[in-house]
Length: 147
Ligand SMILES: [Fe+2]
Ligand SMILES: [Fe+2]
Image (cartoon, rainbow, N blue to C red; front, side, top):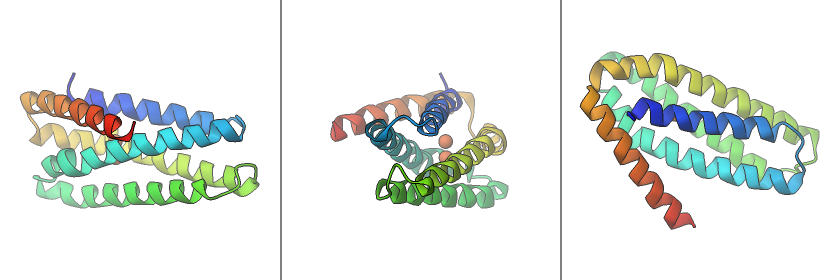
């Protein structure tokens, strides 16, 4: 497993949750799904911003792309936090979930194409494997903390 596999796996998890959120599952389930999504995003984005992105941004050309990606993390998190305070039965809620879903799907796609491509030029295979290990470790620790 390298860092690309690990991040892609979690992207898939996020996409699944987003799909479930859009399938009218009842307010209790929605709340749970949102909470899971939030935890997933927090852990994932923090690792990207602290470890993965800085490695990619060693290349000057990548810096702008990385700054955009960080903005997208912030945007997704504010959309999600707004959702927590909204009425899960309202049309506004459904609209906002759609906005969040579009934003995250766009972000994930850019990450898996442009950012991963730039990353492969700065991060060698050994480091990519090491990074995946670090990521799994951090995830476990943070899950424990929030349990
Ligand atoms: Fe990601
Ligand atoms: Fe990201």
